Image (cartoon, rainbow, N blue to C red):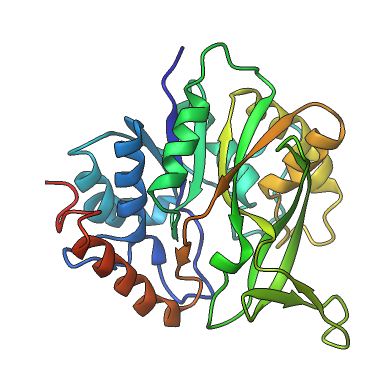
Length: 303
C-alpha cells in the first residue's frame, strides 16, 4: 500500500487578501501558515507533500517555502493551469483564474499515487487534524469509495474582519456525511454566524457547533476518476464559464447522494486560523507566537 501523501492547494489568487498569502510570513523566521501545516503533517506521519501552485509563482514559492520544507520531507510540485481540463472540455478565451479546488486536485493527479489528504495553503488546521487524517488514510485494506472530511465547529472558523464561505454539513448518527451546502458571505454572530439569501432582508443564524468543512479531505485515489467524469457536466451547467468554479463539495455531494461514496466526518475541535483578509494576519501571528512559546513548535521548523 502506498503511504499517504499531503496535497497542498496553493494556486489561489488571494484577491480578497491583496497578495500571495500562500507565502506571506507569520512566524519569526519567515515561516508561512503552510509551513506550520506541513510541519504538523510531518509529525503525524506524512513523508511526502505535493504543492499545487501556479507557474508564475514557482520561483518565489520554491525559494521561500519548497526548498525549506525539502529539508524534512519529499517535495513534489504540480501546476494548476486554466487549460488543464478533462477531455471534451474547453476553457473560454477570456478565462483567467483557475477552475476551483476540484480542478486543482485533478491537476495534481500525476503526483498522487495512493491515498492523499487535501488542504488549503492559507489555513491553519492544528496538529490534531493531521493526526486524524493520517490515521484514516493509513488503514489496512481501505474501502476504495470511503473518504474522509475533517469536521470543524463553525464557531472556531469565522473571521472578525469580514464574511467567509463555509461548507455547512449535515452528519448522520453513524458519523457519515449526508449533505454539504456551500454558504457564502457568512458573518460572525456571537459564537456562531449568520447568512442571508435575499440581500439582507432576512437572516438565518447558525450555531457555533454547526459542523463545517474547511477543505481538509482524506481521499482514496478513486476520487480522481469521479472528478474527471463529473467535471464536464458541471462546466456545462455554469452560469458564467468565464468566472465559475467547480469545488470539491460539488463533486463529493453528488457522490454521497448517489451512493458512490461514503465520507467519514472526523470531528475536529481545533481552533482554525486563516488570512482571508489582511486584517486577520495579526491574530495568526499571535497564535503562532503562543504555540511556539508553549513548546508546540520550535522557533525554526525546518533546520
